[in-house]
Image 1: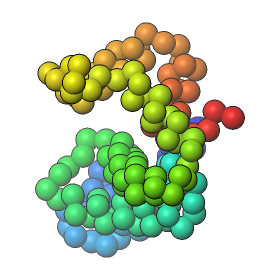
Image 2: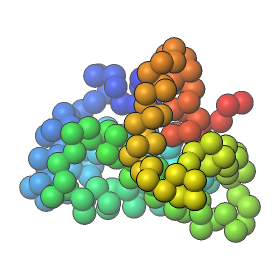
Image 3: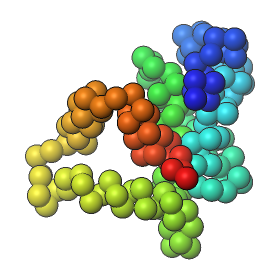
Image 4: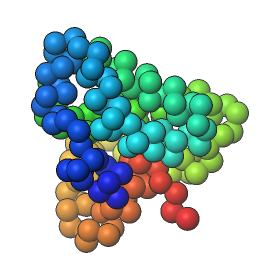
Length: 162
């Protein structure tokens, strides 16, 4: 799992802060370094959501464009999380588009599971997405590491539980 998340030091070619500086300098090497360091992770997230290589590849490429457009002015504190969030959101948008064709049933099941327990505007109009995120984080901190990892892999990375 650590290798997948880009956390092994020997795999990382360049420090995240330096990559971010390359984006601020508008140096296209930033995209190459981002792909070198986080490409596998981005592809994994996109593929786990979309179950289609071509669509996943397109979402990863769109992620790099999104990062390029966001930095500057954004200066992310956690570059890996920043990239993961972008690829995940782009993949989910593509999944919504593909939903009409009934693809990726596992991901739709995961989203339906979450939808059934999370508050919506009808019942909790004053609860923001940020509040829900804080509650989930608080809950996960009370769980053992295995439960936390399974939850994150299932509902953030959309890994199959099989």
